[in-house]
View 1 (cartoon, rainbow, N blue to C red):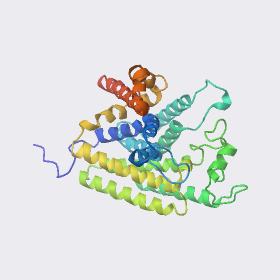
View 2 (view 1 turned 30 degrees about the horizontal axis):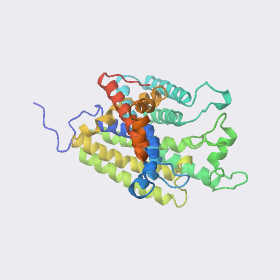
View 3 (view 1 turned 135 degrees about the horizontal axis):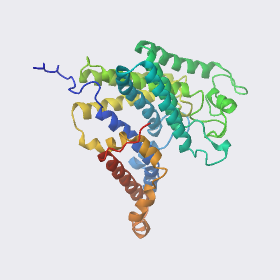
View 4 (view 1 turned 90 degrees about the vertical axis):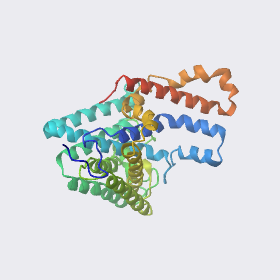
Length: 375
C-alpha cells in the first residue's frame, strides 16, 4: 500500500502539466489579443475615475515607469521559461542532450519564422521586413534559455542571469554614445537604440531603433531565466505546495524591491528592457504565478479559469490565427448597425466584448476537439 503524501505536497506528479500555468498563459494572451479594443471601448465611456485608471493601465508607458500593459510581454517570456523546465526535463529523461538541443534550435527557428510572417512576411518590400519583433524575441529567449538549461547546472545558470543584468547595466551606463555620452537612457540617446541604428538592418518599429532590438535581447533572456528558476521550484518534488508559494512570493517581492531601487540609477524602461525592468516585471510575474498556482493547483478552484486554459494551451493559434479570422467583423454582424448605434457611447465596448466572446468560443471549440497548433 502506498504511503500517504506529506502535508501540503501536491498529489500531481512533477512531470504533470500545471493547470495554473496554462491559465496564466491564457490570462496573458487575453490581454495581448484583446486589450487594445477594450481600451478604446473604455475610453469612449470615461477617462475619469476607476474606468479612466483601468484604461490608462492598459496603455504602454511612454518611456520610463510601468503600467500593467508593460507587464504583458515580459510575463509571457517568464512563462516560456517556466514551461521549458517541464518540457525539456522530460525530454532529457527520454533522450540525450544533443537531440534535445537540436529540437530547441528547430523550435526556435520555426517560432522566429512565424514572427516574420506576423509582421507581414514577404508580402511587402524587402526593406520593410522586420527581423526582430515579439515572437522573434520569444524565440531567441527560448533558444538561449533552453540551451543553458540543457548544458549548465542551476547555479551556473544563476551566474549567467546575474551576468546578463549587471553586464547590460554596465554597457548602458559606461559605453559612450556618439553625441550623447555615457549613461544617457533617453530615447534615441542610449546605447541600445544606437546599436539598432547602426547594426539592425531592415525595418525598425520606432524609426531608427526597435523596442525588441539587438542589445536589449540580452536582458530579455534574463527574464526567461527567471521563469526557469520558478519552474525548477515548482517541479521540485521535495518542496511542499506551501513552500513553493511562499518562495515565489518572497522571490517576487525581492525582485520588486531590488528593481525599484535600481530604478534610481537605471530606470525601469520597457522599450530598452532595462535590468531594473527585468526585476520589476519578473517580480510581478512571480506573484501572479504564486496566486494562480495557489488558487488553481492547490485549492483546486479551476472552473473560473477554464476560458483562460482554452487560450493558454493554444497561444500560437490565437496570436497567429487572429490574422486570418476577423472576430470583430463577425461581432458587427450581431451588435453593429442600428443595435450598435442604440448602445451610444457603450457601442465600442459592446463590440469589443462580443468580439472577445467569439474568440473564447473558438478557443473552447478547439480545446474540446483537442486541436492544438504547436511549434
